[in-house]
Structures are given as structure tokens and as C-alpha cells.
Image (cartoon, rainbow, N blue to C red):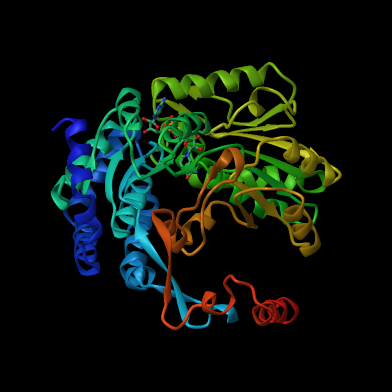
Length: 465
Ligand code: NAD
């Protein structure tokens, strides 16, 4: 089937899809859940190993578990989310009742990135399907084995008129974006997010943009620098730093710098041994283009000020870059030009909290501001003086695992939210419903405005508000 035929098929099916029952949607999601826990588990693990040496335990932990958690939350809450929600009625509207109802948007398009290819594809797909939409998923071309497996999985569970996968890269995505959808859910880079939004504007299609950026971490004077170093290292070097919410760079109060550096080094050694590039649990850089991009940032940074305090080596054949920490590089040097999205960690020391706050304020709003601190006063101060999609205090990454917490960016890191009910609302139109049961207010106060009616209006003006 061509893409044009698939789109026509889903358009023709739009009404029937929104008419499907909660029981039907739950049945399909149950089938997907069983497939992920059973016969498809190994196939997906294998595909991700072939794509970028992501080990099976990490696939289970960071791809399958969060996908299953999302399905569980949908199954438990769908009926309630779809039920009409009564809202209050103001006094002048006595005789009426008002509700909101989450209505399916219609035909939706999901474009996914490669870095968590299962989770970031199936999470929005399941949520959109549960809302009563048809879905076309375009996974990434950079993880071809996983994308092929996803296509086969979706074809096994869903009818093409309800959910389907279109494989390919930029040309295929461009072809899809030229078509009219009722919602586009895009996860990827800020640059491509702009392309998606421009294409969507032609039809005024609403978009959710889950983008990237440089998420900073502040390690305050009141923090436990050693513990912060360990936690930041885990978050930064998992998936070789190829995580949208990885700590991109760190500002460490001078009093905590030594402890922080030691914490990072100890954690890397504990997780990946003396030579992480040889360790099977340390994943590859996804493709040669991204390897070259990161390697040239690394090489450029070596020619600049700053101390390469750990790592600094790269193995092109294995497509691996050692976990690298550079202390006090130039504030506008190679490491600070763009989102790193790799295992390079610039660390800046500071003496006055205003320094990092000022720098963060000059950059685009990030997905997350991470804070390591014990002082409540400083935690609140940092939150109030920065803008971001989220804040996580004394931990990194784990905030995304709470499906009850809306997830999304602000400004250049994105718009709209995903996760739980917030994600469900993204795929629905909150339709307002107003029912007049008794005599309406205009029976009493419409023209001609007699003296008696003016009295009523004046009474309302004086006493109601
Ligand atoms: P990307 O923007 O290059 O690609 C994402 C998707 O867009 C892919 O399916 C790709 O085929 C498609 N695409 C690429 N160029 C396109 C074009 N010109 N027109 C239409 N579609 C196009 O991103 P990526 O390299 O796959 O992922 C890395 C980026 O994604 C990072 O910036 C990261 O921060 C971000 N990201 C964000 C989140 C989040 O939830 N906010 C999650 C994961 C990754």
C-alpha cells in the first residue's frame, strides 16, 4: 500500500475509529502488552543490539517497562478520562448544565527519534489510539532494525486503518508532512521541530513538539558534591549520553568541585570498568555521522582552555567515545555551541550562584534544570530564576519515569505535554458541552430593555461580581 493510499484509508476510517468502545481499545492494548512481554521481547532486544549495541537489560528497563507502564495507566484510567466532566454553573445560567468531554482528534501522525526508538514510538501511539484516533507512526531511519520490528509488531496487532507504520527518513517524513492530519506528535531535534511546525501551519494542524536542548545542572554549595557526581555520571553516560534529558553541562560550586569530580570518576569506573569503550554495557554512538560530530567537538575542545579530566578518547571502528569530563572549558567553546547528545560532560566551577543563573538565562529554555542542593532556599531561588520544562532536585533522569508527571519542554525545548492524563489530553479536543434545561436568562433580560429589566441587570452588576 502506498502512503497516499494508507492516508486515504485512515481518513475514511476516522469516524469508525472514534466510535470504537473502551473495551475494544483496551483489548488491543492488552494484545500489545502481551506481545511486548512475550514473543516480541527478544526480537526487539536483538534489533536494538544490532542497531547500536544497546544491551537487553537496558532495553527492558528503559524501553519496555515504561511502555508497559503507559499501557497500564491508560487501561486503568481510560474510562474515566473519556467520561464527561461536569463543570460549575454560574448563577445567571441557572437552568443549564455544562460539561467537557475529551473527543478524539481524528487522524494523527507520530514522528519518532532513534534514541529510545520503542518507547518514544509506542508511548504516543498507544495514547493516541486510546483517545480514539487513527495513527501513522514514522519511526527513525537511524535504527533500521528496530523500526522494521516495530512495523511488523504493529501490523500483527492493529488493522492498517487504525494504526500503521511508514518506514523511511527525510523524504518519507516530508511526504507525510505535506498531508493534512488532525494532530502531529513529533519527538526529535529542535531544528526538525521547526520544519514540522512550519508544515503543520499550512493546515493549522495542532502539534506536540518534544524537542531537545542543553539541560543544565547546578551543584550548589549546599550539595553533597560526591553523591551529585555519581548521580550525574549515571544519567550522563547511560545510553552514551544520547538522551534528550541527559545533563548536558554542569555548574559546580567551587567548594564541591573536587568531590564532584571524584564522584563522576568513581561512578564511571563502577558502571563501565577501566575502559568503558570496551564494556558491552556502554552503548555505541548511533551512526558514523553522529560519531564524527561528537569526535570533532571533542577534538576542538582539546585545542581550547579546560582540563580533560576523564576520558577524551574515541574509537571510530567501535563507534564509541569514552565518557569524558572537561573541567572549566570556555563558556562559549566547542562544548557549548549545541546540544551535546553524547558522552561529553563540560563542568564549570563557580563561586556565586548568580553566575550559572545568568548564563542559563542567556540560553534557550531547556527541557530540564537539574539542581543538586540541600538548601531549600537555594533550590527555590534557582527554580524561580530559571525557565524549563521541568526541574529535578537531587536526581537526574528519573522524573521521566513518573507517568503521572507531565513531560515536555518550553520554548525551544518544545510545546505540549506527554505522559498520563496530560498526554491523553494532547491527543483529544476538550469539547465544551452546554445544555439548557430550564428557561434561559434571555427570557428575562433581552431587548426591549424596560426599567424592570434594567433593574435586574443592575442588580447582577452590583451583587454578583
Ligand atoms: P531528528 O530531529 O533528527 O529526527 C527525528 C525524526 O524526524 C526522525 O524520524 C527523522 O526521520 C525525522 N526527520 C529528520 N529530518 C527531517 C526533516 N527534514 N523533515 C521531516 N522529518 C525529519 O532527531 P534524532 O536525531 O532522531 O533525535 C535526537 C534529538 O531528539 C535530540 O535533539 C533530542 O534531544 C531529541 N529528543 C527529544 C525527546 C523529548 O522527549 N523531548 C526525546 C528524545 C529525543
